[in-house]
Length: 118
Image (tube, rainbow, N blue to C red; front, side, top):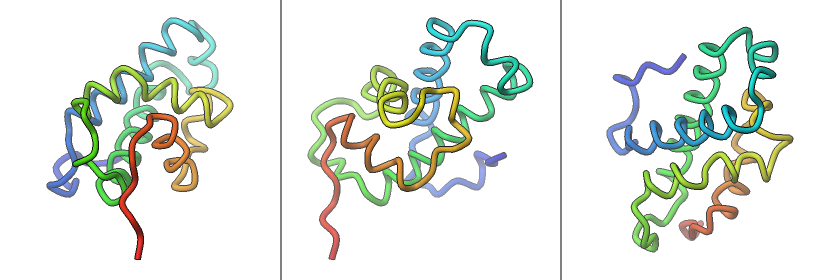
């Protein structure tokens, strides 16, 4: 599990919380009890949601053009992150399978611009 005290200083803890809350809310509404079996309980599901949110935020810090975003980043993630994850995967039931190749698709779904690469 990621130790929050070891995250790079550029990482926004509010963004991580917001993304995790987005996933948790969608899961509560849509998947009800089916998450417990998949993740060995709700606590493990939240750990997976937190890990995915942290990984995305770390990726975003290196790839997203935050200057081009007009919304508050944590609010945008709270409102749309779970929907974006669900759109690019088989749903929030697959949080453990998310990886770097998925983050660009999530960012695209969120409608954020990426930094130009050299």
